[in-house]
Each structure stands twice: as C-alpha cells, then as structure tokens.
Length: 258
Image (tube, rainbow, N blue to C red; front, side, top):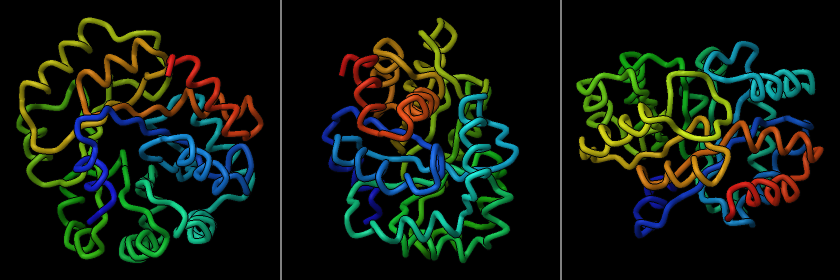
C-alpha cells in the first residue's frame, strides 16, 4: 500500500501534521538530516520542495529558500541521490512539492520510477493542469505514485468533485487564493470555505495548508480536515536556526503550543 494511503487509514481520526522544507536550503547537504529529525520528532508526513527559479505559488520566504537552494547547486537528480541513501530508514510518507517544468525535463516516467526507488510516495505540482494529469495518470498509476491536487476557495464544486473522483491519497486544501505565507488567523470567509468543503463529504481526506503558523490557525485547520501542512513558518525557522531542524522544531512547537 502507498504510504500516504496507509497514513490516513491508520490515523484513527488523529489529526496529522505535515511539514514542508525546500531541499538544499539552507545547505545542499541538509536534506537527509532534516528528514530524519522530522520523523524522529513525530511529524506524520514531509513535503520536500524541489527548488525552481519561478515558484509562482510560493510567497517570499519559500522563494528565498528556493533561490538559496539553486545557488547551492541543488538539482532534482541530486535530491533523488540523497533520498536513496535514507530510503530504508524512513517509514513516513515523503511528498515532493515541485513545478511542472523541472519534472517534465527529468521525464515523467523517469521521475515516477526514481520516486519509487527513493521512497517518495506522492507529488504536488501546483502548475499541473488537471487535464494534463489525466493524460499522465496511466504512468502515475503504474508506479503507484499519488499526484496530489490542490483546491482553493475559488475552485468550483463540480471541479472539486471531479478531482475527488479521479485522485487518490489526499486533497491539498489551500486556505486562501494567495501565495504561501504565515497568517495569524483565518477570517470569516475562510471559515465559510472550510465549512462548505466539509459539507461536500468528499471521499478523499483533506490536508489544509498555506498560512498556518500558530495554535489558532493550526486548530482551525485540524478541526476542518484530516490535518495541517506548515511550510513558510518552518522554512523561516530552519533558516534562522542555520539548518538545525531540532532547534527549528522546538520554536515551531512553542508557537503551536504542541
């Protein structure tokens, strides 16, 4: 069974926490240490960012991390080689977060094959059109990789149901239509969006991301989905801690009162 499906099947309604970091930032060699530390500290799932020169869905913090990673010489091929060295030690799901250009240059079938070889269970591609995903789906299914689709407050009900019917794993529920970045709280319109999606009774579990940085936003996300994804706040803390994931987690957990 794909590790993503197993995680949600075995969670027993426990609220999950996934963290994002950009591979190769702050340093090229930090990828494996960060992943090991997050797993050891009880994080349920990890999003590994593939750096790209034009990350359109990301705010300034993650853009800065991607720029630093590229300056450090990070490539998709290098990330795969790093992940291969820890494959047997990592039992939680790893999910790539990357942009279509980088993945298509690598080759979609080669990409899926390398994911299997390195223990990556899924991928989020914000700029992948859904019609293109459907064309790629036979290859994706062949390698048992989960391509995770995003929905936003602007996504129509028909499209959400179409995504729900044609994907497996979980749905990435973006809290707002803006780019990534920490928020202090979610407003009334976001809460109404959460309720609207809850009322749809989708078959796939949902993880809420974008804007989660403190106890208030974490609890709001966990009350309205299977769990939460934290990106920008952890990336910022990791940079401030000079790549020490334990120190960054200590500060994150303090902010979350976790």
